[in-house]
Length: 448
RNA sequence: GUGCCUCUAGCUCAAUUGGCAGAGCGCUGGACUGUGGAUCCAGUGGUUACGGGUUCGAGCCCCGUGAGGCACCCCA
Image 1 (cartoon, rainbow, N blue to C red):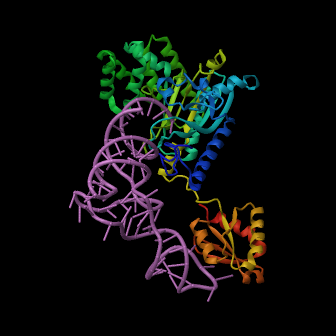
Image 2: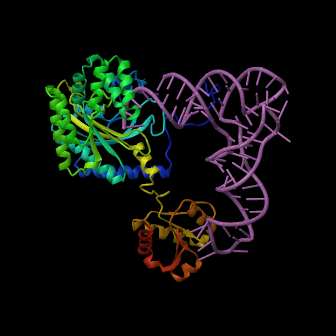
Image 3: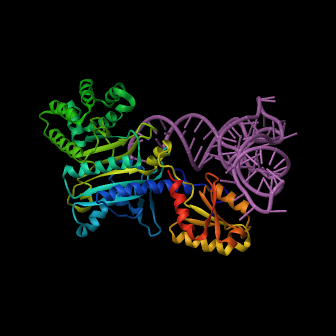
């Protein structure tokens, strides 16, 4: 607050962070409500954790690239702290802290903001919300299948069109690199390269592999393998032939076979997911099946990432507790929903405004508002200084409030009300006694 | 984090080679004393993102900062 004279800046939000209008908040809340509903129908319970963690808790979990994106600073007590980068590492810390009181397998969902110091772009912010479900304490592929089934239910509950879940397995990826004869030191770069298959094509991947120092024969074998994609059973069979003899890879294929069987048993429609041997995923802590949900229109990259991380919790505990989970990005979901006009959202929560024609009806207006609120209706009365019917209706129109109840001297004398539908312009007179019921009827009638 | 592009009224955008900052929409008031959304009339609109430099003169040229966008990197 001292050098304000030199850098005069208009009031502004920080890069990559934003304000939300009432309309945006109403949409976000609706999306969250839908997700919560799906999560809870599977028996996931909510938890929350602090936005701030000891830096040490977050350090060394995300790989070199991820580490650079951590918000890190020293608090007034001299502690090294960091803003959480995802909800998975805080969960691991949570499990380590609360281990004794948890019932395993522990199923929780967690919805809240996370922070990454990236360069912002469309659908990419420095503060964004993740919506996670995780199962802690079991190696069963049933758990992996369940979180993906949650995804599928969530996406269909939101009406997101053409979202496809790409699934792969970390140890399959490793086997693939081994089989192709890629030296272990190059493996990470190889994963990164093949993950770009969709974006830069086979030719691009080949070039990048060569540039990394992979021999051209090895590069060719990698390309052959990642070309496999599609109907899980077929891809698994083909991969079994290609990777026969590699025990770790075969085991990964067994796990995937089990996962896909379970997924089918969960009732997941076949078109929504596929086995994609080119999917890599960057986060260091994944150890088993990994998945990503992508949507083509608009092209935002992925809407979510998922995977198994059997050693992460062990980093806090000294003893491994296996876990698997799936995460959805709220702002990217909202972006898709907006783009396609799914989930039409009102401008305001107000369902009806009660207006007085003259000062003399003000008390009656408040009394009526009370009754309507007691009937579960969202009601407002005009709070401006001047009672003026025109002004009040203009206000209601601007806020897109659907109904107006008008009380003037005539209505008061006759014990009736005027109910105006601002959407259609229709207007009716009704006895005071049926006000609440009629307003409720008109509200549900006008709703799609 | 690297590179490139952009920033003018609340919004969308104009402004000749450097020469008086404009329009539409919106907003406010009125025509309309019990009726929003239509029409008409009048009014309101600016530290040209911010700070500096060059120049007689900068929205325009130069430097820095901030924010947005695109690509890379990475990812939700």
